[in-house]
Length: 120
Image (cartoon, rainbow, N blue to C red; front, side, top):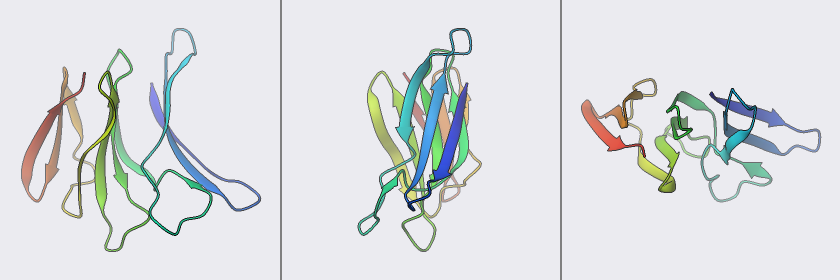
């Protein structure tokens, strides 16, 4: 299971995390910031909320982030798998709800075109 956790704590810092949990054991497999906060942000972990999350049975996860640091709004496609954490795409033309997973292939739409990457 994968989900986003968001919070603003009393002293004003904010965080957005993607969490992947093994439902059989309850163990957290991944707990990573949604993205890297832009320059000038203070006490922020993550860079905004997710618009879509997909997860494989082995815990590999990908999501689309709506960046809180940029105007006009920019979206980013992120993944965490056997290759580590990485950003697969970014730009204002990413369709925020277009993320899909078929087997190990991740799909999204950007500027009207379909893109894909392998989620290991």
